[in-house]
Image (cartoon, rainbow, N blue to C red; front, side, top):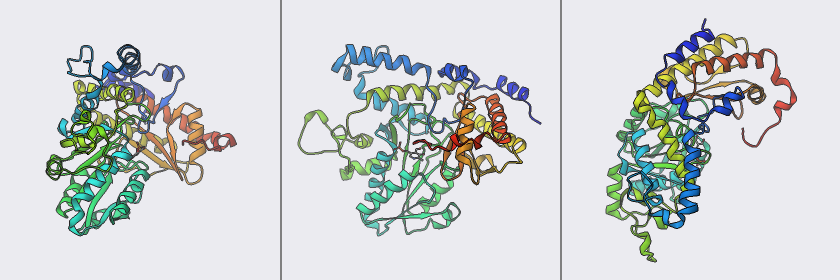
Length: 431
Ligand SMILES: Cc1ncc(COP(=O)(O)O)c(C=O)c1O
């Protein structure tokens, strides 16, 4: 049996442990909370509060409009706000193992997906292929956006089950749109194999990295496009801007064809401050920018991304992945050994390589009230209809002892039937 003392021991031996200090967890620790929802909203980095204060009072308050151009103090950078998006893109590029000039930070994942799918459709337009294939359990925004993009161009969205995925990749597929780690089950696709299969079939491979960027190394070799969000494992804050990656072979072709993305806003123009009435796309990845960058949100995102980059000195993304596997393994083992008599069943793969940084259990009737009762006991996970209890493990700030304590409280909620109190069945707007 694993004891709490064993978990404390593992924390003492954890090379990522010093990184917890980068986060503002004082209120969480004071209240005795255990936060297992970094796969939905990352924790506030300590630096963010001071950085936003500085941006608001010094750069906006005192600098006013001059701050678009003035260098950031001590940054050594040629300009301030106007290149902030590119600065952060360069940092995110390191986390997803691509070149800086292949990424932009802008808008939301949904919007970026719309741009990317339109680019992919343009590439496949004359091939006679019209099928955009995705997974039935992909995150709904991906499916809704894909459906809109498909309908606008005479393409169709075809949904398949996970089991049928490999068999469905044939030379009728125009675009394969997949999320690396499934938001419900935490199942992780084999990125390399699926990308290879898509390419071999002549399909364009689009990856959604929302549940992987910052949580594990990703290998986009051979892929065509990727999008991802800033507010989960990148700790950028609620509604943080998202990112887009485009393979340079497509960027070169877009330059050649003078391709414009459908959201052809002025800051994606080749010369925004020429104020010409005609749109001329910027070269390369910058054409994926639309309007004015949200400077406050970007400033917070940069602090979040920096917390992940800080892991470089402690083993980087490989160490993050290693600890993520250890935390999720421990959670599965403890829940199954201590709550085995309850009706919880694991829907996340047992094999670590097939799993992201979250663990999900299904409860056949009462997932929602169980999660609410657990939150009332200070363990914050979340619920995904109709029956999934989700627990996210962010290795930068989650300790082994947190896993032990969380399961301990889960045993109390279940064993004493606390969740049966009717107040836990009242649905909030966000679950
Ligand atoms: C896989 C995936 N894609 C997209 C989104 C959300 O996109 P947006 O930031 O545009 O709301 C989420 C949100 O949880 C997600 O899990």
